[in-house]
Length: 324
Image (cartoon, rainbow, N blue to C red):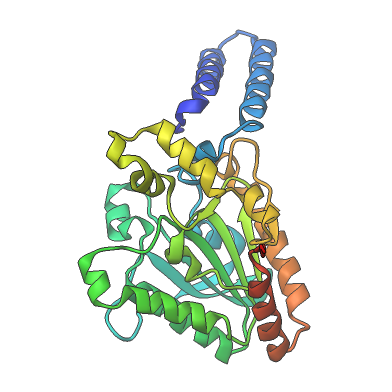
Protein backbone atom coordinates (compact mmCIF):
# COMPACT_ATOMS: atom_id res chain seq x y z
CA UNK A 1 0.00 0.00 0.00
CA UNK A 2 1.43 3.35 -1.07
CA UNK A 3 2.12 5.94 1.62
CA UNK A 4 1.08 9.54 0.92
CA UNK A 5 2.37 12.67 2.60
CA UNK A 6 -0.10 15.30 3.81
CA UNK A 7 0.38 17.57 0.79
CA UNK A 8 -0.15 14.57 -1.53
CA UNK A 9 -3.71 13.87 -0.29
CA UNK A 10 -5.40 15.27 -3.45
CA UNK A 11 -3.25 12.88 -5.52
CA UNK A 12 -4.13 10.01 -3.20
CA UNK A 13 -7.85 10.54 -3.78
CA UNK A 14 -7.46 10.54 -7.56
CA UNK A 15 -5.23 7.47 -7.60
CA UNK A 16 -7.61 5.63 -5.28
CA UNK A 17 -10.43 6.29 -7.76
CA UNK A 18 -8.25 5.04 -10.62
CA UNK A 19 -7.49 1.80 -8.77
CA UNK A 20 -11.17 1.33 -7.94
CA UNK A 21 -12.14 1.73 -11.60
CA UNK A 22 -9.45 -0.74 -12.65
CA UNK A 23 -10.69 -3.21 -10.07
CA UNK A 24 -14.29 -2.85 -11.22
CA UNK A 25 -13.43 -3.36 -14.88
CA UNK A 26 -11.08 -6.31 -14.28
CA UNK A 27 -12.54 -9.43 -15.93
CA UNK A 28 -15.87 -7.74 -16.61
CA UNK A 29 -17.51 -6.65 -19.81
CA UNK A 30 -17.19 -2.96 -18.94
CA UNK A 31 -15.17 -0.53 -21.05
CA UNK A 32 -14.10 2.44 -18.93
CA UNK A 33 -10.57 2.79 -20.33
CA UNK A 34 -11.17 6.34 -21.53
CA UNK A 35 -12.33 7.42 -18.06
CA UNK A 36 -9.30 5.77 -16.45
CA UNK A 37 -6.97 7.50 -18.93
CA UNK A 38 -8.58 10.87 -18.20
CA UNK A 39 -8.13 10.37 -14.46
CA UNK A 40 -4.52 9.25 -14.93
CA UNK A 41 -3.81 12.37 -17.00
CA UNK A 42 -5.46 14.53 -14.33
CA UNK A 43 -3.42 12.83 -11.57
CA UNK A 44 -0.17 13.40 -13.50
CA UNK A 45 -1.00 17.07 -14.04
CA UNK A 46 -1.90 17.51 -10.37
CA UNK A 47 1.30 15.79 -9.27
CA UNK A 48 3.31 18.02 -11.60
CA UNK A 49 1.60 21.13 -10.21
CA UNK A 50 2.18 20.12 -6.56
CA UNK A 51 5.80 19.07 -7.06
CA UNK A 52 6.73 22.21 -9.01
CA UNK A 53 6.05 24.39 -5.95
CA UNK A 54 7.43 22.31 -3.07
CA UNK A 55 8.77 24.13 -0.03
CA UNK A 56 12.08 23.10 1.62
CA UNK A 57 10.10 21.48 4.46
CA UNK A 58 8.04 19.44 2.00
CA UNK A 59 11.24 18.32 0.28
CA UNK A 60 12.55 17.25 3.69
CA UNK A 61 9.46 15.08 4.15
CA UNK A 62 10.01 13.49 0.73
CA UNK A 63 13.67 12.83 1.63
CA UNK A 64 12.36 10.87 4.65
CA UNK A 65 9.57 9.10 2.79
CA UNK A 66 9.29 5.53 4.16
CA UNK A 67 9.02 4.06 0.64
CA UNK A 68 12.13 5.85 -0.61
CA UNK A 69 14.93 3.52 -1.82
CA UNK A 70 17.79 3.03 0.65
CA UNK A 71 21.46 2.14 0.14
CA UNK A 72 20.91 -1.63 -0.13
CA UNK A 73 18.12 -1.06 -2.67
CA UNK A 74 20.47 0.95 -4.89
CA UNK A 75 23.27 -1.58 -4.43
CA UNK A 76 20.93 -4.31 -5.64
CA UNK A 77 19.75 -2.25 -8.64
CA UNK A 78 23.14 -0.81 -9.62
CA UNK A 79 25.71 -3.48 -8.94
CA UNK A 80 26.67 -7.12 -9.24
CA UNK A 81 28.67 -9.44 -7.02
CA UNK A 82 28.22 -7.33 -3.89
CA UNK A 83 30.15 -8.79 -0.97
CA UNK A 84 29.18 -7.12 2.30
CA UNK A 85 32.01 -6.68 4.79
CA UNK A 86 31.35 -6.35 8.52
CA UNK A 87 32.96 -4.98 11.65
CA UNK A 88 35.38 -2.23 12.64
CA UNK A 89 37.96 -4.66 14.12
CA UNK A 90 37.76 -2.76 17.41
CA UNK A 91 34.32 -3.08 18.96
CA UNK A 92 31.54 -4.56 16.80
CA UNK A 93 29.59 -4.34 13.57
CA UNK A 94 27.16 -1.45 13.09
CA UNK A 95 24.18 -2.31 10.86
CA UNK A 96 23.43 1.42 10.36
CA UNK A 97 26.32 1.48 7.87
CA UNK A 98 26.72 -1.14 5.17
CA UNK A 99 29.59 -1.59 2.76
CA UNK A 100 31.60 -3.94 0.63
CA UNK A 101 33.12 -4.58 -2.79
CA UNK A 102 30.85 -4.70 -5.83
CA UNK A 103 30.95 -4.27 -9.59
CA UNK A 104 29.09 -1.36 -11.16
CA UNK A 105 28.90 -1.90 -14.91
CA UNK A 106 31.87 -4.29 -14.57
CA UNK A 107 33.90 -1.63 -12.73
CA UNK A 108 35.07 -2.91 -9.30
CA UNK A 109 34.25 -0.37 -6.57
CA UNK A 110 33.88 -0.11 -2.81
CA UNK A 111 30.30 0.86 -1.93
CA UNK A 112 29.50 2.28 1.53
CA UNK A 113 26.30 3.85 2.79
CA UNK A 114 23.83 4.50 5.59
CA UNK A 115 20.95 2.03 5.89
CA UNK A 116 17.75 3.04 7.72
CA UNK A 117 15.82 -0.21 7.43
CA UNK A 118 12.22 -1.06 6.58
CA UNK A 119 9.62 -2.04 9.13
CA UNK A 120 9.87 -1.55 12.87
CA UNK A 121 12.12 -4.55 13.56
CA UNK A 122 14.76 -3.66 10.96
CA UNK A 123 14.67 0.05 11.78
CA UNK A 124 15.44 -0.74 15.42
CA UNK A 125 18.21 -3.14 14.35
CA UNK A 126 19.76 -0.46 12.13
CA UNK A 127 19.10 2.30 14.70
CA UNK A 128 17.04 4.26 12.15
CA UNK A 129 20.19 4.89 10.09
CA UNK A 130 22.00 6.68 12.95
CA UNK A 131 25.52 5.19 13.14
CA UNK A 132 27.58 4.55 16.26
CA UNK A 133 31.37 5.16 16.26
CA UNK A 134 31.98 1.57 15.16
CA UNK A 135 29.94 2.31 12.02
CA UNK A 136 32.22 5.16 11.03
CA UNK A 137 35.29 3.11 11.91
CA UNK A 138 33.98 0.29 9.73
CA UNK A 139 33.49 2.78 6.89
CA UNK A 140 37.04 4.06 7.34
CA UNK A 141 38.43 0.51 7.36
CA UNK A 142 36.65 -0.23 4.08
CA UNK A 143 37.91 3.01 2.52
CA UNK A 144 41.50 2.11 3.39
CA UNK A 145 40.91 -1.33 1.90
CA UNK A 146 39.70 0.29 -1.33
CA UNK A 147 42.76 2.55 -1.34
CA UNK A 148 45.06 -0.47 -0.93
CA UNK A 149 43.52 -2.18 -3.95
CA UNK A 150 43.21 1.08 -5.94
CA UNK A 151 39.41 0.86 -6.31
CA UNK A 152 37.05 3.87 -6.50
CA UNK A 153 34.82 4.51 -3.48
CA UNK A 154 31.09 5.26 -3.84
CA UNK A 155 29.19 6.42 -0.75
CA UNK A 156 25.43 6.78 -0.32
CA UNK A 157 24.43 9.32 2.33
CA UNK A 158 21.08 8.94 4.11
CA UNK A 159 21.02 9.61 7.85
CA UNK A 160 19.28 11.96 10.30
CA UNK A 161 22.71 12.21 11.97
CA UNK A 162 25.18 10.29 14.09
CA UNK A 163 23.63 8.59 17.12
CA UNK A 164 23.93 10.92 20.17
CA UNK A 165 23.54 8.26 22.89
CA UNK A 166 25.75 7.95 25.96
CA UNK A 167 27.37 4.71 24.77
CA UNK A 168 28.25 6.25 21.40
CA UNK A 169 29.82 9.27 23.11
CA UNK A 170 31.76 7.04 25.50
CA UNK A 171 33.20 5.09 22.55
CA UNK A 172 34.36 8.27 20.80
CA UNK A 173 31.66 9.40 18.39
CA UNK A 174 33.22 12.81 17.71
CA UNK A 175 36.71 11.31 17.28
CA UNK A 176 35.42 8.67 14.84
CA UNK A 177 33.73 11.31 12.67
CA UNK A 178 36.74 13.65 12.83
CA UNK A 179 39.08 10.81 11.84
CA UNK A 180 36.92 10.05 8.79
CA UNK A 181 36.92 13.71 7.74
CA UNK A 182 40.70 13.90 8.02
CA UNK A 183 41.44 10.56 6.38
CA UNK A 184 38.94 10.91 3.52
CA UNK A 185 40.55 14.20 2.59
CA UNK A 186 43.81 12.37 1.80
CA UNK A 187 42.73 8.93 0.56
CA UNK A 188 44.52 8.27 -2.71
CA UNK A 189 41.68 6.83 -4.73
CA UNK A 190 38.57 8.47 -6.29
CA UNK A 191 35.63 9.12 -3.92
CA UNK A 192 32.10 9.78 -5.20
CA UNK A 193 29.35 10.68 -2.70
CA UNK A 194 25.61 10.80 -3.37
CA UNK A 195 23.00 12.13 -0.94
CA UNK A 196 20.00 9.86 -1.57
CA UNK A 197 17.75 11.02 1.31
CA UNK A 198 18.72 12.93 4.43
CA UNK A 199 22.21 14.31 4.86
CA UNK A 200 22.26 15.13 8.55
CA UNK A 201 25.17 16.99 10.14
CA UNK A 202 28.54 15.31 10.82
CA UNK A 203 26.85 11.94 10.62
CA UNK A 204 26.48 12.55 6.88
CA UNK A 205 29.71 14.46 6.38
CA UNK A 206 31.71 11.50 7.71
CA UNK A 207 30.94 9.77 4.38
CA UNK A 208 30.88 12.96 2.31
CA UNK A 209 34.45 14.24 1.87
CA UNK A 210 34.73 13.39 -1.81
CA UNK A 211 36.01 14.37 -5.24
CA UNK A 212 32.44 14.59 -6.53
CA UNK A 213 29.32 15.16 -4.40
CA UNK A 214 25.84 14.75 -5.87
CA UNK A 215 22.32 15.02 -4.47
CA UNK A 216 19.07 13.51 -5.62
CA UNK A 217 16.52 16.17 -6.51
CA UNK A 218 14.39 15.75 -3.38
CA UNK A 219 17.17 15.01 -0.91
CA UNK A 220 18.38 17.42 1.80
CA UNK A 221 21.79 18.15 3.32
CA UNK A 222 22.21 20.30 6.41
CA UNK A 223 24.12 20.92 9.63
CA UNK A 224 20.95 20.23 11.66
CA UNK A 225 17.40 19.03 11.05
CA UNK A 226 14.59 21.61 10.76
CA UNK A 227 13.10 20.20 13.99
CA UNK A 228 16.41 20.57 15.83
CA UNK A 229 16.89 24.10 14.54
CA UNK A 230 13.32 25.07 15.51
CA UNK A 231 13.76 23.59 18.99
CA UNK A 232 16.87 25.72 19.57
CA UNK A 233 15.32 28.92 18.26
CA UNK A 234 11.68 28.79 19.33
CA UNK A 235 11.06 26.10 21.97
CA UNK A 236 10.78 28.74 24.68
CA UNK A 237 7.75 30.17 22.88
CA UNK A 238 5.65 27.03 23.32
CA UNK A 239 4.91 23.85 21.37
CA UNK A 240 6.49 23.45 17.96
CA UNK A 241 4.67 22.47 14.78
CA UNK A 242 4.95 22.39 11.00
CA UNK A 243 4.94 26.21 10.82
CA UNK A 244 8.17 26.45 12.85
CA UNK A 245 9.72 23.47 11.05
CA UNK A 246 8.93 25.05 7.70
CA UNK A 247 10.43 28.38 8.77
CA UNK A 248 13.59 26.60 9.95
CA UNK A 249 13.87 24.60 6.71
CA UNK A 250 13.63 27.82 4.70
CA UNK A 251 16.43 29.39 6.73
CA UNK A 252 18.73 26.36 6.61
CA UNK A 253 18.95 26.32 2.78
CA UNK A 254 19.10 22.55 2.82
CA UNK A 255 17.70 21.58 -0.59
CA UNK A 256 19.75 20.18 -3.46
CA UNK A 257 19.05 23.33 -5.48
CA UNK A 258 20.31 25.58 -2.65
CA UNK A 259 23.51 23.58 -2.21
CA UNK A 260 24.21 23.53 -5.94
CA UNK A 261 23.92 27.32 -5.91
CA UNK A 262 26.40 27.50 -3.01
CA UNK A 263 28.75 25.11 -4.92
CA UNK A 264 28.74 22.67 -2.02
CA UNK A 265 27.68 19.92 -4.44
CA UNK A 266 28.58 19.31 -8.08
CA UNK A 267 25.25 18.29 -9.58
CA UNK A 268 21.59 17.55 -8.85
CA UNK A 269 20.40 14.13 -10.05
CA UNK A 270 16.80 14.37 -11.29
CA UNK A 271 14.12 12.15 -9.75
CA UNK A 272 10.89 10.86 -11.31
CA UNK A 273 7.84 13.06 -10.79
CA UNK A 274 6.67 12.34 -7.25
CA UNK A 275 10.06 11.22 -5.93
CA UNK A 276 12.50 8.32 -6.22
CA UNK A 277 10.03 5.87 -4.64
CA UNK A 278 7.66 6.35 -7.58
CA UNK A 279 10.17 4.76 -9.97
CA UNK A 280 13.26 3.39 -8.18
CA UNK A 281 14.66 1.78 -11.34
CA UNK A 282 14.60 5.08 -13.27
CA UNK A 283 16.31 6.81 -10.32
CA UNK A 284 18.94 4.07 -10.14
CA UNK A 285 19.62 4.47 -13.86
CA UNK A 286 20.28 8.21 -13.41
CA UNK A 287 22.58 7.47 -10.46
CA UNK A 288 24.42 4.85 -12.52
CA UNK A 289 25.03 7.34 -15.33
CA UNK A 290 26.33 9.88 -12.82
CA UNK A 291 28.67 7.41 -11.11
CA UNK A 292 30.12 6.11 -14.39
CA UNK A 293 30.67 9.65 -15.69
CA UNK A 294 32.47 10.62 -12.47
CA UNK A 295 34.68 7.49 -12.50
CA UNK A 296 35.57 8.21 -16.13
CA UNK A 297 36.60 11.77 -15.22
CA UNK A 298 38.60 10.77 -12.14
CA UNK A 299 40.36 7.60 -13.27
CA UNK A 300 42.93 9.49 -15.35
CA UNK A 301 44.15 11.54 -12.37
CA UNK A 302 47.15 10.45 -10.34
CA UNK A 303 46.64 9.81 -6.59
CA UNK A 304 48.56 12.98 -5.79
CA UNK A 305 46.43 15.04 -8.17
CA UNK A 306 43.21 13.59 -6.68
CA UNK A 307 44.21 14.64 -3.16
CA UNK A 308 45.34 18.07 -4.31
CA UNK A 309 42.11 18.78 -6.21
CA UNK A 310 39.98 17.43 -3.33
CA UNK A 311 41.72 19.90 -1.01
CA UNK A 312 41.13 22.78 -3.42
CA UNK A 313 37.49 21.78 -3.83
CA UNK A 314 36.95 21.93 -0.07
CA UNK A 315 38.72 25.27 0.23
CA UNK A 316 36.41 26.80 -2.40
CA UNK A 317 33.27 26.08 -0.36
CA UNK A 318 31.83 29.13 1.39
CA UNK A 319 32.39 32.85 1.00
CA UNK A 320 33.05 35.86 3.16
CA UNK A 321 33.11 39.63 2.93
CA UNK A 322 35.60 42.03 4.43
CA UNK A 323 34.27 45.27 5.81
CA UNK A 324 36.24 48.36 6.65
